Length: 192
Length: 192
Image 1 (cartoon, rainbow over the protein chains, first blue to last red):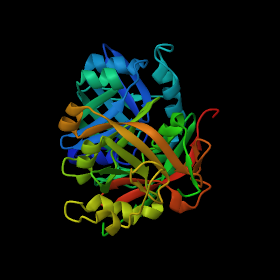
Image 2: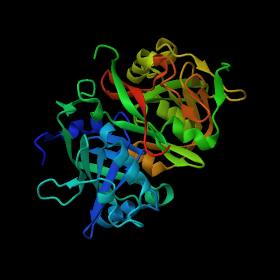
Image 3: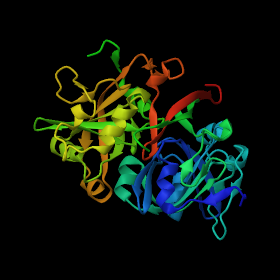
């Protein structure tokens, strides 16, 4: 594990997703690793932290999530734009080496085989909270966050520091096709 | 209706939410209008467009949504940061004039009483897709978008133009407390 990657307390994990970044969804089942891009991921609860993510029935990653009952959500950086676009447009169904061919290297937390995408800014390991009706009718999956980590060069002490970090650390926010925005400047409201 | 507010085709409505902005949720029931802030709103489907939003049981707006079966999601701008923070921290339960006291003025689409917050960049009128288990267990509400509009000074021809608009039009993305980020600069991946 990279020395810059530090655990994030679970009660602060929602902050990793609260600003609506596009994410990568990874999973592993029966020895197969995969990862896809998803713009439709969202925090759902604080404690225990939960999140939602939409996984289309055509995706290979969805089958790994359903098979293993686990997945990870991670935040690609502006420096990983091409990687994000690649994993969002290739399929393991057509390319069995999709992760490597998309420029993805995985790291693993100690004692866990869950594939985590190296170079991201934050990671949330989740167990699937099975809700068959949501999954079938809406492609909507609920995860409970069981562990979280962030790269302290951009998230530390429970807060993002995009404004002090190299711009390549900024989160990316997909609109459509190849069109994204990077997160911008901080704003303060009230006394906070 | 302001001359700058134009309808958004429903097949492009997901683009209003795809980059994960913090939103305002408004509703009206039995003659009562209200509005709250929500960071946990997310696109769910393209056609017909659907979205999810988390509405805590303590909120007065939730009761209006459950009573009327309708709500609107709108995107506050950087220029509305104080308004957004105010409607996120006041309650109609304590202040019956919460919207006005938070600086909110409503507009209405022709033939519809749904309160829409003036000055936002985009609006999505929704009918509630009742899912009692999700609502009770997760505070998770699903809406089908029935109409959408945007201010053409920042969204037109199916695309955001944050980079060409006055910075006060930028969407805002909540982290925690009074800490937000504005959306930043565009990025292009692939051939798009």
